[in-house]
Image 1 (tube, protein in one colour):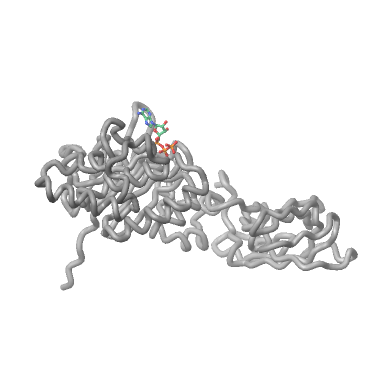
Image 2: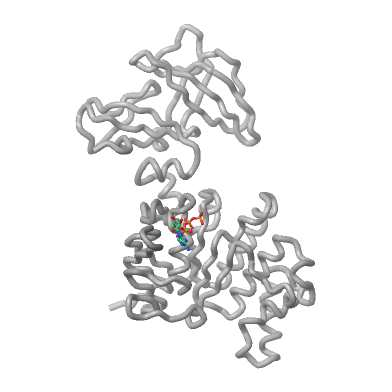
Length: 360
Ligand code: ATP
């Protein structure tokens, strides 16, 4: 029988409490060698706590952490962080200000002979594109360069696992794009398993092979970025990946009725109240005659050029008579006149029907 290697990192049934607060609840997650997995969710959902449990910086109240199939955390075992072969990268980089960049990176390599240590530092500095900065001090480097030093320091001992907590959040938007790109390439070259925490869905999609979405301490959905985007488990996951339109409707003959078309609603009862979640990019517009306003058409409230896309604010006539405000995001420049009428075509692969939140 073919043996498959165990995941590099595995969290099984992790529960973590701070007094009465359940920070992480029954979390199962595995990260394989060479894989980048992002823990994604809103502030306070337990991402950092989960990462800290994996690192051995926080004890778990229940569950197990396994590295290479060996239990390193459980209610009876607790291997300290320095015995876990994990590289850590935090939001604030945590570089030693009084050490040069080379010495910062060499810090975790004291067990290697001096020549080998120097060679390893040089190699990793080259890998992160900072070969000429070994003799500099952290304060002489930009934020992006410091982030790369933090990554180099985490990777220098050749860890099997890299844990990163919001590693790019201190960088401005333009620099962040470049540093993210570099970091992804370096991680992929290293072959390490990486678990990264972020609250930014776009960042998770950029970095991750798989994304694990958390909410209130629990895992909601795990999958490849396109799977989560195209087949979200609920309205929360759908909305986390970008602005969405909510159309509250009811199921009739197996479909949710909306003013811009009916959408198949499998597994719902006749008459059941539903939340139809429509991505703004699911809506295509074409100019129409003023007299056509009604189902399948919309009136333009405003249109704004946002760069690569145009955002069109629309008003549609609900069959019940009350107006519905929708956003359409059209590629390129599309700026129809205010009050003009547009024919609406809906890409149903980007429209999802969910139970109304809070409904039984
Ligand atoms: P953020 O993105 O804001 O860092 P997060 O998703 O990483 O949030 P955690 O920092 O893991 O969330 O926090 C999860 C929950 O545990 C929150 O309710 C938080 O207030 C609580 N918490 C975290 N650390 C502590 C602590 N040291 N003492 C008490 N409560 C804590």
